[in-house]
Image 1: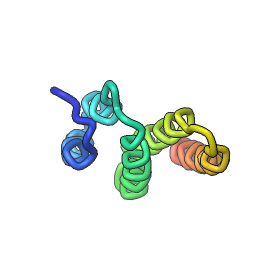
Image 2 (image 1 turned 90 degrees about the horizontal axis):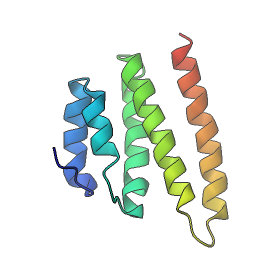
Image 3 (image 1 turned 30 degrees about the horizontal axis):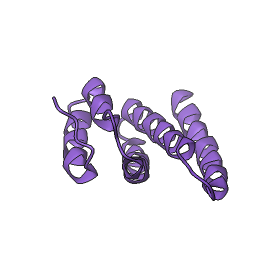
Image 4 (image 1 turned 135 degrees about the vertical axis):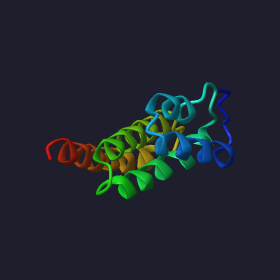
Length: 108
């Protein structure tokens, strides 16, 4: 399986892997080698939104998606350049929020 760094190409494949509950393949698609900075900006909110879709129907997939979103936001923040202090603070808040959602889902 070759991983694309174009979100429009990769997203349907990620959704297929999630629908098949194949988290190993989904993770490979979510984290392609050499992904550009734009990848993280696109993929993080997409994974967060998908997690919300799974909250009631599939807690395990919701947790997985929230974890991936949180890690994508962290990767995005670590690549922030000058002027990225605001982004870092915003991502820190998002990190806390996603970690809270993961904890709540895991404790149900």
